[in-house]
Length: 276
Image (tube, rainbow, N blue to C red; front, side, top):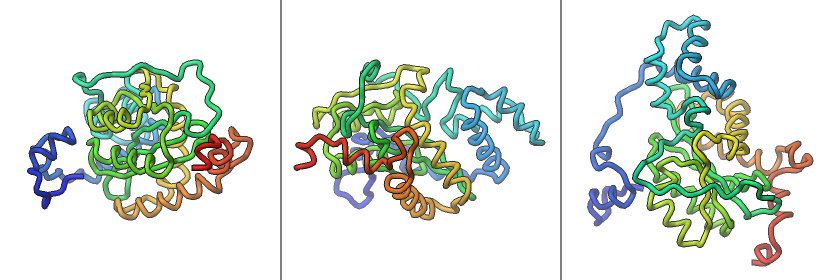
């Protein structure tokens, strides 16, 4: 999102995107091979046992033969943006200065496309490094409407995914996220408000509020990312493009009566939107 050749100063661009100006000049320190391996294992353990904190994950790693302390495990978990679900289920870190919106989905029957969309971020390990993936999902059909990869946890790649979803699929009635700073930023919220979309946010510690997209992360990682061990973001982008095409149009879901997300989305879309 940052354009170094644009006439708008970098300071103003970073202010609009709610990024620290110093981060524009920061060069990331190379992560060691050992830490990359530990982060990959932590991600697998967290996916299987999301209730585990740094102590339990340290014990799991030690059982695998890795000499690592709890403090180092905690440092790596913060770098990855994950924590035990009973404490902080989401990847993104809340900003105390940002407004938090109420959760609107409790008791709501969601049976049609574009009624509710949801978004979330996950950590993706690669053969030589890591990145972050954001996806926007239609709740009723489980269809992935847009996604983006990034090597940082700023708001810009989430905004790009949102703008693509809105341009391709129209607007939902409700948009649900966690309380992460990417989703509570003025830029992200401003887009939702400009389209008159009701904003819903998960309660702190309520990972089940966004359970469908949490299941998506498990599918993405076990069916694609862990198997292929992408060596770069460019390679991951190409592979995930193929996977999401398969996920939307060819992967049948038992929870959808063995239909694909694309079929359910098209068949439950309100008639006025189909006509448009």
